[in-house]
Length: 328
Ligand code: FPP
Ligand code: MG
Image (cartoon, rainbow, N blue to C red; front, side, top):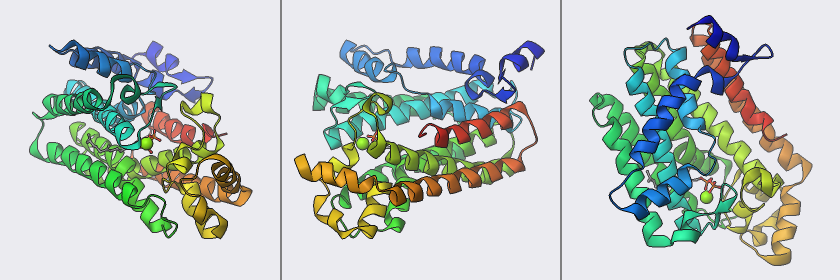
């Protein structure tokens, strides 16, 4: 790495994750834009609408940082960029499908693709993005493709399990952890593992899988917390969407265990919804949820000690910490 890049990637003495892999991400963005093209204008339009709606590119940034932090050089950089973009494509596909399933009308602060284009077109656009991801990475070694496919299987299982537990006041913390391991952490797990293997650091792959799990769990826990805390401008969707939909989010699961009045309010509308939100904002619910996320952040940070010190490793540490700070 050149000296000027090194200076750029450190912001006021602190590693900056986006800057550390800015050059790699620029190549990734070009690739992503290309892959959204279709012979059917509507498909390209829907995909561009979602993918360019201001997503954080958290998953590709994470994959590229893991690749570099594991010592990945130029030899397989193209593959690492493809893996990073495949993660974003798969994630985008799940968002299109998730908004159909949840009848979600707002995504990233804008009308969702489902609201704008309807069920059929959004469904097929999700399939299109999903197929693009495997078109991109299907040439990888069998084991890597299997890792990615297993993550996708878990995504579907997480979504269905979450649906099964909707408005269920008996839901346990164990259920919750299983849902979010599948629906969120699985993709981070697979991305990190694939990145380590592409970097030629197979010995680090299990630790990177654990990093992906802990990072994904922390990310989802904070997302769940933000759903009840808002504000809407920050989270890009109406406050309390999970509560209104009866989704067993972290505050909901912690709240029903603590206060039986919540049981009848899951999925309520009007005054019942306002009351549920108020109960879920109880300081001990918020504190407990935050502490659980912080615990995962500590596990994620611990896995980094298995890597050699580098700017990329520091950037991963910052990326992980930012997950908790974004809620403050
Ligand atoms: C969004 O989470 C949803 C997911 C991460 C998983 C969705 C999975 C599917 C729809 C299965 C289809 C899978 C493939 C591979 C195409 P969230 O509901 O917590 O986030 P949100 O609050 O932003 O909607
Ligand atoms: Mg959702």
